[in-house]
Length: 195
Image (tube, rainbow, N blue to C red; front, top):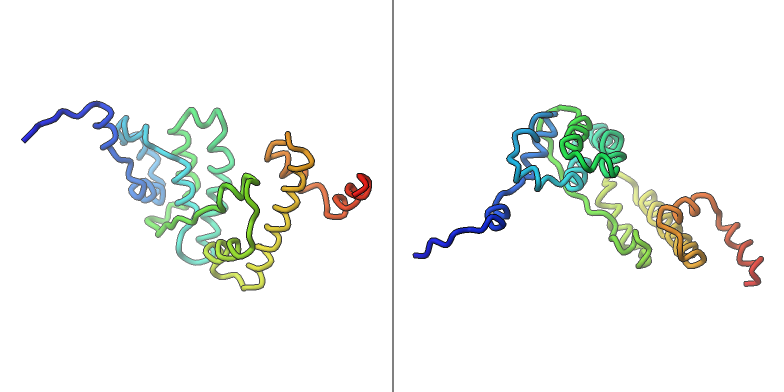
């Protein structure tokens, strides 16, 4: 039997940050949880994953709404600010602030729309969006889900158009421009260009 010594990198990779233990601590508003983690576990702390899991709970509509809105208000808006990212304990405290402190909840992961679609590298397909929105909005009517999917596809087509006309724009600028212009503006622009 060989007793191979583990390198420090191998030892580090065997130390886990328990996502579900962290979610349980967040549900309890355990502000000191981060301080009790080992240095290695603190290095493996990933706020992005916690936001994805924390914002979605099973329960009544009011509780679900609270978690989504509170996570957005207390954490998501600021968590990835370049200054806040330097302080993981602050990120933990922001996540704790988002919790109502009602004890353990059942959290579930809801995937985001494909990155290639959100980065305008691939066009959105209505059926994919219908399937996606059905997972998120289980209580919405089929008509409402269809409207959401239709609107998303329509907006993405407009963003593709803007990105094609102005290839040097950043995604944030494309989003801003998309919110300011209408389909009529695009038609007028095309008419003025002679198309």
